[in-house]
Length: 416
Image (cartoon, rainbow, N blue to C red; front, side):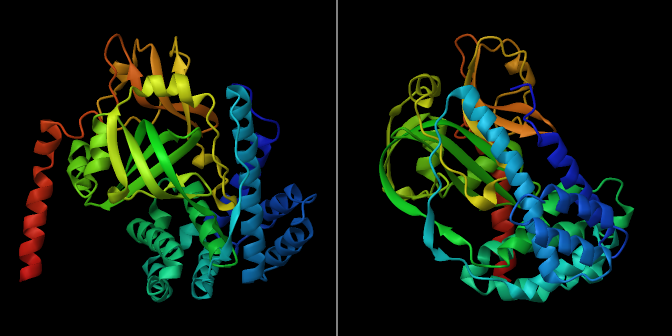
């Protein structure tokens, strides 16, 4: 695991060059970086088209089709990096992985937003101002009106909001180049349409929970639960809106609409599920009225007994990106050799708790050029703290009083 997979560093250098060109804008000198990307794709089906697109843009002729080809090439390179890293991890753990099966339906296109994405590429992040950001309002509004385009609409709305909050971008000391380039690439590819919808099947059985990853954002919080369902690794997520002042323990009361899920997490209970949709990428769509809580099950027992033989889900094409890797693992013994990351602020696991711990159920991630371990639950002596341990505690309830106050104030404003 310590030795990098062959070609990973080189591929990431090419992507970094493309992202640098996108930072300054394709209207400026970006030929070398784009030719490097095309060169990395030379032996692939995209090779010839990528070379033509790089030359056209370097000559000052920027068309949407050229940008789409290069966005596809960038996604392909990151997809190859993802595959190499995930294969390395699966080999180290002896983990089996299912084959991806696409559904029959095709997603719609979003032609209206492509001109704005093209303008971003031509101008570059450092040239973004409020006028350019405001030009996104009309195409995003049109996308939001179409339920079939909601995925693309939310992505673009989030990107526009980040850019607006950063304007003028030229004055920023540090730009999130990789993140913005990722969002731009994904949006441009989604806007093409023609993507097969993920295959869906209805599943029933006993879900054994390994742990939960609590992801906080300024305007939303998502809990992503990892577990084993009948020898298959699955995850299920729910998301609720919030304001940026609600953080840490105060996020748990926001999930009051999911009492079964929160109780299952806090009390570490097994869950009997009935006819829940399971997407081809391993995502279980949660329905409160289709689950029954069972007896508590120790996640370390689940990890020791069920994790090793569980089949990991396939990765959908657009999800093939190193940042997406989050594989459940059980680590026992000396934990000092691991780099821990992404400690959950709403849980009891801290750096002090990790010192001297003898076991950890966590997520292996790859970030910043190295493997890191995100703890979901740890064992330290007789104590086994986990990320949702305080979800139903008096501390969480007290921290959530701010939520009640905000709701009352919002209600008064709406009544006025």
